[in-house]
Image (cartoon, rainbow, N blue to C red):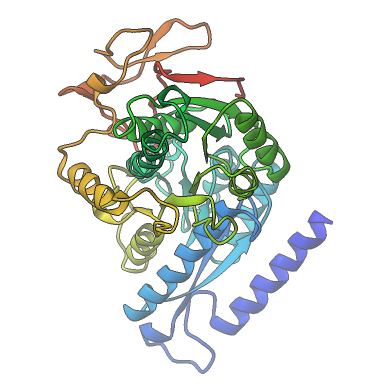
Length: 409
């Protein structure tokens, strides 16, 4: 069945290129730049059912409009439900072979397969989104990108903390019951960085907050995500958040009368009585940058690093004012300005400890519980500088106040 779908994809792309000249002029023979339609590919881990992928599709559509206004016309071809391995390599090969000027692989885990193909298509730029190996390899046409989502996570955590503190102040829960339940994908630095920054944001306005994390061993599985959210609630979580790809943690939270903070897209439509806000990477700027650079004959940066809230590459969805704590939007505006100015450092080492001790050097906890040095000294000027030396997250410290219920590598 997959082979049949791949054949259909090739036929579709060949037809498309017959119609638009595969990056040359449109039918009718015009050679003007405005008539050129450039083919762009995207390999997707999921499909329209995954919140994670829908976030990419929204950005792709917006980028297409922005580029058109600049006189650059593009057409997207997407492949679906290929998280890793040979199917990803086949997708990359077919997209590049059909004339795509860029192929974006939208999830961690795709990069190894992508790299097996990239060298055969030097005229196509291959992008490992949320990955970390392409900028260090010996291929000029492979690049990485990962905006600083930890800034958005921290800000979303502030909204969560405001809600928890309101519940404490109203006597709905005791201070020690301000427990966050977090549905995580894997025990990777990306996920650790995300839930830690979220927790630090929450604790900045709700000092008694603690967190439990339950991993599902998958980037997205609606049934497992719902089960993990329910288990966290059963264990005492008074608010649910997530680093997972579906909306079921939000709907589970709503069915239990528990507030929720999402990821990738607004989840207020499916859980209007629970979901406060979501943080997301807005890939629009990056899509425009890469495609415009290629079309204009430039060189795409090997590692798209240090792009966050102030650049518009990290965003929050609209706050659900109907259920948010009073004053939340004003607080979010205040904290956002402080992050953008540098007044607030998300991983300020004075705000957390590891095993009761303040962190003074960039060490990551290995699986044996011992300290192992990171590749760079990321702790300086009183903070752990996440995504400073490379775009991919490398904060892997297990800080006090967060309890992991399981492991999932």
